[in-house]
Length: 411
Image (cartoon, rainbow, N blue to C red; front, side):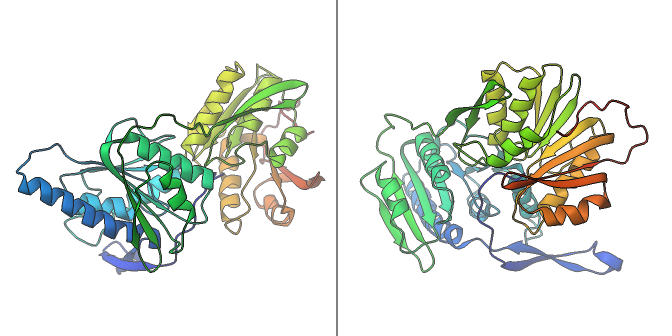
């Protein structure tokens, strides 16, 4: 499951260039998305800030090192890309916690409208990481949606501000011209917060005057019981079901049994409650946890360490083609409810590729109708039944040789 919290981008696009490899030997226009309101407003302020700063450097004839800049984005990273292209003396890091969004940003850079600037700029690094690197920064730019996850926003702000050199600047924006919440958050770092008003957004500038005395830990450690065992779980902002055990995960755990030597794959593992619970049931079974969110993978690995589990492997992956396809006995997933079932279908097909012949898919949902209608397209012996406030759906990959005693069965 795509577990990170991102506000969808608006349906706005501008022509970029003509693709000569269009269908039927014709041509088709490739489009770039315009920045979201908060990112466009932030870019304008960041340009002014950099022009002023670099102008002062020129007047002083100073030969200071390249400016170090980091950015987050709820879109394609248009602000970071524009700054990298317009200010080639800078080093810009565009940071995502989700690999899917990182990959889309890279692709977006590669359809630039200029024939001479059609690739990712050499001074722009677009990376997917659980946390911002510890390297020091001169400027951090943080465009934010006003409906974003508040704890993730505070985490982003703290990491960006902490990495700044004293004298460095944090520029943050929000798509709410009447914002007060973000302003209050920034005043926790510095009393002096400059404001730039825009029609559709509000932009803030904060200059760091002193190091942070203490960093707030936004991680959460909790425990839940599964089959009389206490399972330790670590969650983080930006990962699905932060600070609590998802009820859907509980229903999924209750629906399956694990047998020795079973090979299971947890698709869209989140913080790893299902993977950890199943791994603790039988140390001879192996569980492969996959997610597109780098923080989700981090949480699973931390959970495995806390529970002394050696039978969990992890994979950061956004394309659904996982390691060792066609070898797993069971695939488990808790598909998201948004995306008009397009994401759900991708996860189901990823499970189909991962399973061996005769392997079983088991998923949990609150919307069973789509699965009742569509699972038989790919699986046999399909069933859907209620489980608490949820439904469990399952099916078997068409088998050439189905084992007499399956290694994993639905409860």
